[in-house]
Each structure stands twice: as C-alpha cells, then as structure tokens.
Length: 477
Image 1 (tube, one colour):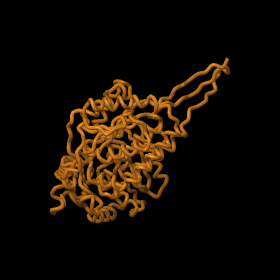
Image 2: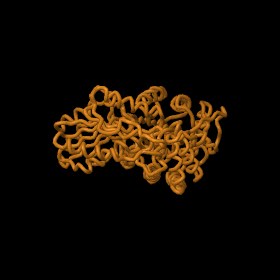
Image 3: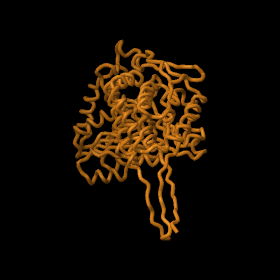
Image 4: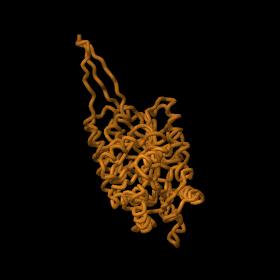
C-alpha cells in the first residue's frame, strides 16, 4: 500500500483509514492509499513550518543542486512512473511519460533559475541613504493539483516554491495520488531535508480545507474548477495568503481563410482530444471562416473518426474519461446540444465491445451548428467533444470567442501577421497562440483572465508569487 510522506517519513493516516485508487479503463484496484484527515494535514504543515526555519537560509546554489539530484532520480524511473500514471489516470502510457518529461523540464527550469534570483540596490534622493530590495521566501506553501495532469501541474508549483526557499505540502487529487507519492519520495531521497516536501492524500473537503485555512500556510497554489477556486480565494483571503488560481477554460480556436489548413487541422484534433479532452487549456470552441469551412470540417471529421480509443496500456491515442461522473457530464452536454438542433459529425456514442465495458470510454465527438444557449457553450466541456461554427470574418470570431465567462487560452491560424496581432490584442485570454497548438511552455508566464483564474504560473514571473519583496533603507552617515 502507498503511504503519505510527512516530515521525511512514509506514514499512514492517524485515522488508519484507507481508500482504493482504481484504473478508469478497467475498474481494477491499482493500489490503496491513506485517507488523510485534518490532523494528518496539520502534522504535514507543522513539519513544513519547522523545516522552513533552516531551509530558507540554504544557499540558492545548494537548493538547486539538491533539485538537480532529485530530477535525475525521477528520470531514472520514468517508465515505472509512466505506467503508474497510466493506470491511475487513464491516459496512454506514451502520453503519461510525456507528462513526466514535462514535469522534469519544468523542475530543471526552476532549479537553474534559483541561483539567478536577485534583489536590488536603489539610489535615494538623500545621498546619505540608500535602499535595498530583498526577495525572501514566504514560508509553507500549499500545492493543490487536479487529476487530469497530476504530475505536470504538481511541478508548476513545486519547482518555483522549492527554488525560492519555501517548504511545501502537496495535496494531489484523491483519484491520482500514486505517481505523485513516488516522485515526492524520489525528490526527498535525493537530499531534501525532512519536512521540506510533504504529501497528504485524502478528500479535498478535509485535507484541502485545512491547507487553505491553516494560518501557518502563507501561499496557496490551486489548479482546478472555477467554483472551487472561488472558495479557495474566499477562505485564503481571510488570512491574506498569497494565491494563484489556475481554473477552467473554454478556449476558442479561430481558423482564417488564409490559414495553413493542414497545420490547423493537426492543432485542432490534438488540441481537443489529447488526454481525452480533459484539460483546462484545450481547444473547446472552433470557429472557421466561411470560405474554408466545408473543406476544413470535412477533413477534420475524417481524421477524428480515425482516432483510436482504448486502454492506455495499448497503442491508442485516447484512453477513457477519468470517472463515470465525468463521462456522464460530457454525454449530457452533447445530448443537450443535439436536442437543441446540433448536428453530429462524429462520435456522440460509446465504443462497443468487451474491452470497453468496464471503463469510462466515449468516442471522440464533433458537432456542428451548436446553439449558443446549449451546455456545450455555457459550461466547460471537460472531455472529447468539440463544437464547430461557421463565421464570416475575424471580428465575428473574436466577438464569439470573447462571449465566454472564461479566458484561459486561445488560438488563431492565419498567414497574415496583421490579423494575428489584431486578434492577439483583442481576444480576452491569458495566453494566445498564433499558428500553433496549445502548449504551456515553462519559459512563458501562464494563467487566465475572467473566471479562468488569478496570477501566473510558469516563467520567471512565477517566482514572484513565491517570494516576499522587502524594501530596506540604510543610513550611511
């Protein structure tokens, strides 16, 4: 049985309760983990708080060297970790290994940044005085990650937090804790002092609530649903904790009449159906100029119909949805659109056969003429279903793109750089891609506007959310 990792030790819950982690492709039990409670979470926070007293004074170079050793320890186990991630989350093994590679890239990026962190010398009007700007770690950080990309999104929090000299308590999604536990054990075994990095498994309503309300936690990084993010902000705000919220999205992709259609098609089907469409950052609304609509949609439909669905341990592109509830939600959104007049171009069904009976599978779905008042427009679609609309020009496409309450990402395909700039300036989103698939680069700041969140992860900018800026004035005479 897997265990939590608190204060440098693998431990059970003080309640001695456990729960099963199941494979969404087969329903089989992958492993059991402790069902952590508030006391377990307090123990982890206390351990992190104690460790912070020394860890904060380690040199940036020392922190970086420890992180580099941990990165190599994880890299040496990537195949085992990828298989575990496949089993607990459902994504194909190759995509699981890609996710861990992304995690390693991000951790490396922040380990390299650690020694480059700088304060500043500030000349002042009074020549007998000068100022200094110090960048100091905040303290105990709560890292709360979802189940869709549990390792990548853990890394976007651990990397900058540890590099800046903070300590961390990680709360993984209840359904995907296994790979995270293994990675945290590997990172800690490479030299992190006891208590610097901890993980508590269990329900969000218990473990998560303690993390965001405990006064010893000074920083909360949360990725998840927008309504949960609102609650995190409300509770964390009572103690003025530093927060970043990376929440939902309904990302538009606009294809202009001068676009490279082959390239745009690849970006569309990968951007929508990768990870079974379970991503906040994903193509979720498709707007195609009238002049190329028929040609593009016909080609896209044929490609979507060829996507292989199945158990992630076999050679497939798309595994199952993560839970029965997630599949039911997507099916309800599709059914609602069809009942209001949408046309099914592909999918809107479950794959048939004995191999699919126990898993939460659904065929990749493409719909046309989806009404604007349907659930596929008004709700976030967290699964492999994509609505497509015909538009007359860029202004119409931008207006429709901006009609959403979310503003995470957006894509535009055009050969005209003037159009590209026009769209990038006017689309309400935290990130815009031009002639490119949605890729969250660790080197670039990432986050949303409107209901898609607060703050930025990735890039040098992320480090600013893990340090306190202190101004110091010194008199010399």
